[in-house]
Length: 316
Length: 215
Figure 1 (cartoon, helix red, strand yellow):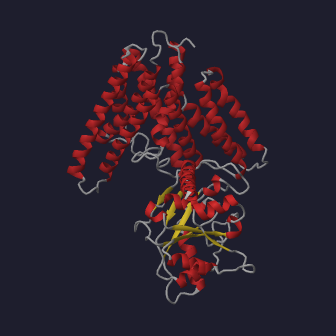
Figure 2: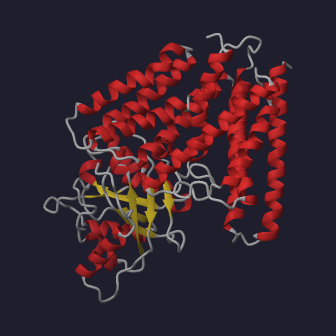
Figure 3: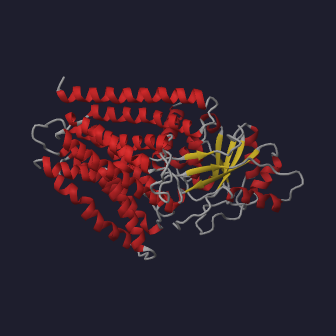
């Protein structure tokens, strides 16, 4: 067994153990406080834990399937996220072709370029080509009402749901000396730090949360949850330095940046939801809401993590 | 035999495609699932409307649900008639009263007597206007009078008109919700106008409060 595989197995066993623990706690809480299923918070907690099992299972399958598996998983995530996003924005008949092009051209091409390891084109495909071509497609229909607003919303959807989200699998294209063949562990590192930060903020918030941090944006987020979550996720990230090309200190710093980006990304995406008058982006993941509700912090942290790693560690 | 198998495969394929595109999700009324035999009446903005209703019904309700559709449209070609007749087992009615050889209400009543549920679009045609709902045709009332025991279930289909507006041939993926309302029945002494108004109101009450897209 290569070290990468054994590290992956260790990680999976660790995550599995934590989920097992979470499921037992959820079970006991349910038996004690909500035997008839009437306590909404506990039912939601258990739905979330169940969904976590499914998500970990899916990610594990993708990792086992290798590069193509990871690319397909994130291409699907981008598709589902884009679908949730476009559902909530203002579109008119005249945007039909521009939106169809976003789904059926921009998204597959973006992931194809990653598969082909054409980093130079990948990095500018959506920010340059799609950015300029989409308004051209839309303007051909001649509908000027709210034009800038409409086209900006579609651009933003594409940047967030496809371009930014695809920076997670883009980690596979980095060439880091003495880290060959281990890039998939960088994805594991990013996903574990971001998601554990979300979960730890939730737990710290539920246990000690008193002071609301952004009542207008996200009524459930508290200062205590934020501080406790970021600090503990940073420590967790530092303790995972052995799966990264970083030293423990560097891994901790990276984790801190990831968690901060994730937190503020969550606030940005909440602002959009509040403006549109919805609580969740969708219903894809039982207990969590839509896919974007789970992906928002990843989307904001992945490109920054990618570029920091690329600038300081990668040869490409 | 082979035709049946093909029809079964086609129905599964169409359903999977519809779900992949729209992540269709039913929101049931607080009183629970609709009765086993129902007349689902829905807003009509796209050819895919009945497919979405059909796709979100649980299997035991779905297998007896038959869409009521225009014979002129579905018998146009071999393919459409295969889809209309074999795949969806549609009750095909003739829309043009002058050329009619059979009475649509009679056909629907017969289908109900055979145990089927019906999916009907009382607006009569796809709504291409800015209005949320076109005025209902009277067929729903006459059918309800004929078979007063069968529950009428209002169903609001949200967003499908944005997925594939009339005249486009590439659908765009958007999340669609299908909102089932409380079953209603025609009252013994209710007039046609009163019933139609009530049915329209029941359907409209399921529409989302504000639609800020004007697609």
